[in-house]
Length: 517
Image 1 (cartoon, rainbow, N blue to C red):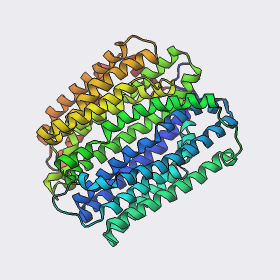
Image 2: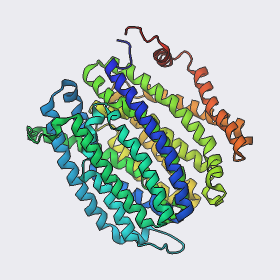
Image 3: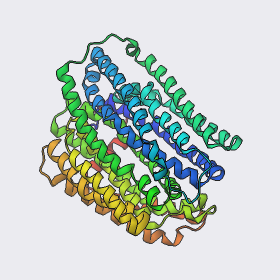
Image 4: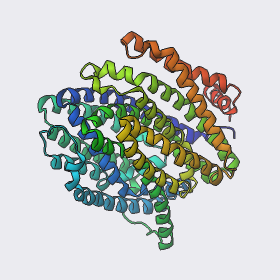
């Protein structure tokens, strides 16, 4: 069989990509609308507070320990074998774990409240109670673990996210509408957070009811207990995933805390607009990757190692193609867009181009390693890269503090690139080549850094061609968009025109529909 996945897996992946893509595109648009109102009503100070507390609670979410990733791995085989009893046992265990995690988050979150005044750094006091605001954020985060959210793991592992995307799309509009109404009518940060918390509860409840209808056996509380020997293996895998997640958190969720302490919480607000855009684009790319991730688990369970590598190369090339286009566009267009959007309100919202470059390289690292990470998790190689991810995260914090004191924002984000590129990404790609596919250390790595060289070429050519139009008016921005989108596509087609993975993907797009595979 020469197809990337079998027909049912591909169909589920396409349905998920389309439904989730529509939802994420709507989310992006609605987020800009509500963010604009937020900035005009409450200002950069509250925007910074929002980004800071979100980062702190992302660190607390480490209490999840990587249970979700490990459970997904254990679900792949029973789903493929349609073993309902096994699925029920895992989901009941998952439910208990997540309830405990929710309580731990509330406990740990409450314990760190006394240090909030040392982390929040404003030139003048903001007219809110920091402890109350923080506690509302804490409840919002913990509630998803305490109530119903665990059920979504089964939908994701079964590649049927499209079944709940209608709910997500509805709540995208509802959240935006409520945000705007609360901000315009009440102009109150407390009311804004309370309504957000209530909507999270309502969405989780409705989603859980939908999942119960799709998988009625989840309501059956009778199950076969997981054996102690398997429990031991499970928690060993969780330990490996947890160390990997700690490293990821130290890379991705400590920047706002360091920025707040060193440069001020309002600077977190300026940066948060860039983070919002990049994270939304990351989610769009992630939808494509995650749609195939469960299919990867199926491939690992059923296919030979040679077939697994063929599928890996095709998916990896697809993600690279998407990543080089997105990275080039973000680098060229971010500052131009911010200027047109809110730059007239305050020029401080516009960050320097070197900062944008570091943010974009970090985006590229994160997106282009996701397929390798999906194969690592789906194959059960949870120990691959775990220690270096943790070491890299620690080095990132130390470097960010040192370089941040000398070079400000550029120093903080350059530290992330240095630590991530040298300590985690490079050995991680080498480890996946060895542990997952049984190759030597250099095969995947040489390919990865060749692709990165092509990215550098795309960034340079695009900047040269688009510089004269940079940060001008709307017409210039449209020209910039055309250049930033066209250049990476042309470069990829020229460089990879004889690449078998490109040929395979083009064939899959343009092949006759009635052709039998």
